Length: 82
Picture 1 (cartoon, helix red, strand yellow):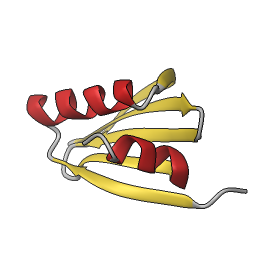
Picture 2 (cartoon, one colour):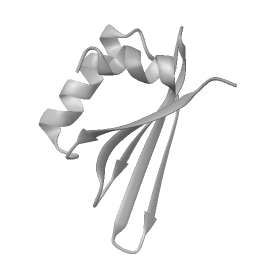
Picture 3 (cartoon, helix red, strand yellow):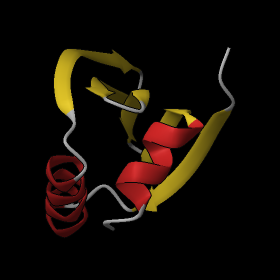
Picture 4 (cartoon, one colour):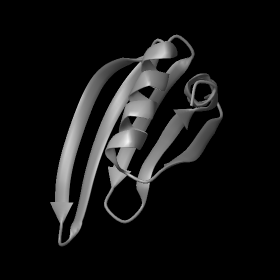
């Protein structure tokens, strides 16, 4: 099992989403799944991605913002481009 890492990217707004999507593209990420849910006033959207260096999940949460989590090497590959 590979080491896991989590990184808070920033607010969930258009500018941050664009920056994150550009970083995912530069890292060679391929989206392999998505999920959306609502619990009270909390909205959560999750996308899963595959990279050569592993898998990661992007989570957009109403009061938290955008986060990356998953295999350390995959997260690092994306963070390098942020």
